[in-house]
Length: 91
Image 1 (cartoon, rainbow, N blue to C red):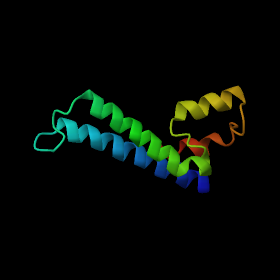
Image 2: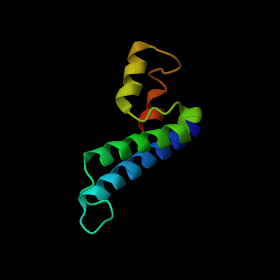
Image 3: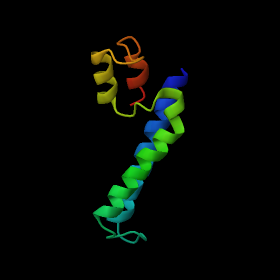
Image 4: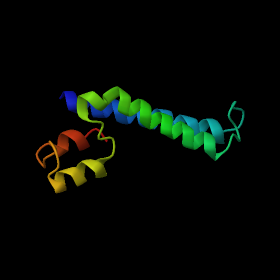
């Protein structure tokens, strides 16, 4: 259950911060309106950093289901097919 909650929180942080910076640049009457693509890229990079820093030690920060599926298919590390639903369900 701990992994499930960590992945849920990490995914929520990633989406909240990443989409927030896009909204700030795109929407009129915001401080960051027309700031450009570099602000969006930096914002998404910061969002990934924050999400991984917050949940990395708990769940390994498998914030992308494709990464989890790839690790299970390769048999790499602790990821197995039986653990995959625990990592993929929060998304």
